[in-house]
Length: 121
Image: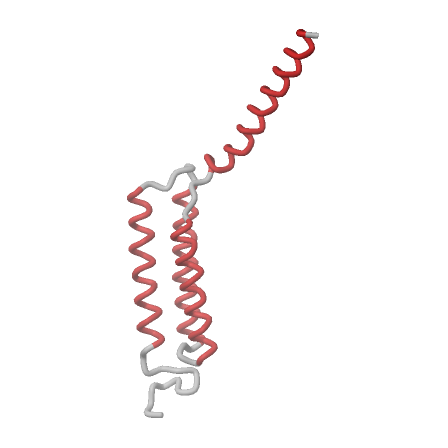
């Protein structure tokens, strides 16, 4: 009876160790970037809203989307080794700041979907 209890205990302990390792492995292999991800979503929404309202022309939106794609590719490269270093985060943050300023600048220039030449409305 004691042997059976001991065997069940060992099997249960071994199973819990394996399950714990399986749940930790994905988190360890890919560094999470929740702040960068959320900021990308926000900037994408700003671009989409600018197109919808006519504040951005198709060409301006295309430039901004390309800038966002470049940042996404840079983020993926930073994650390749499984760790996003503070220097990589700083570079991504700097690029996102520039993209944000570009979105603002293009949304507030004189060119609009209805007024592509920037003439007086």
